[in-house]
Length: 396
Ligand code: PLP
Image (cartoon, rainbow, N blue to C red; front, side, top):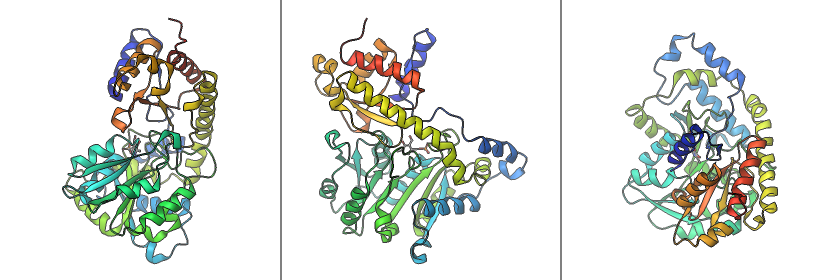
């Protein structure tokens, strides 16, 4: 649906219509300059064009793991826990997740997801023979799921739970308190694996930074799988590098699977990543995070200006916001039955030139995802057009 709407937005732009594209799932910036320079430098070496080790280049794997321990403040963890974790590099975090689910799931295994979820979760779970069981995070609770409700969804068939904080599409991350509560709950279920999708970890714009359940109970790492990559924090969705940090027995299985399917990930990109320090990534992201925070504040101001304050909630990470279409004057008057988000997003695009993503495939009805990455001038114009349309004030 996103691609379809994008294609329509592009075709309308070609016809000369002003289009404001709020569908983007990527940062519209060039990656850090030094990284691009290293990519160019590395083209001098033959091994940049040759097969990489299946699990990824050793220096990169060590760098990823070292950064992980440091950023999660787990450097001084008991070596017996640390030594059991390893990294495997794949072709993007989606590929990492697909391999993990392929390795873990037997037919009929259940995986709990939190709705709204990233649309690939249920599709990949089902592709690998599992059953996706979703627990709804309600808008009136700021899209934070209730730990009790997650616990109620656990059955004897539950194999794993997928958490995604900071979250696509809601643009929030869960608090320390929530993570502690989750750690306490999940520690009771020793057979359940937690897949923690942390691809937006570096993109948070209010203090304190995101934390995770295993920081409060590190022994949970023995059944935790962390997904990360360079698509979001380095603005490199097209270079296809993802990381899985997991217990070594699982990494060994992933290694076998990857070796017989896609082989090792892109050599050139891995070689260049080895030179990219964490400090440089932080420097690169600082203005971007400020920009996202500013846009989230513009969004708040605009929603209150158009009397839509009751459906505003404060985002703090990733770069999205979920707009509850059902509570807007336009949708109330349109009195649609069931889920009308696809039609409404299409009408919005036709009438205003603003492209947004209907969330039907993300597990919620009558809602849409707005991306907060556009420059200030464009995003203000987009909000004005969108909210005046939804509050029936657009001059036709
Ligand atoms: N996880 C989430 C929550 C995402 O939003 C995305 C991309 O949109 C991914 C994983 C996959 O990222 P990659 O481009 O590394 O495959």
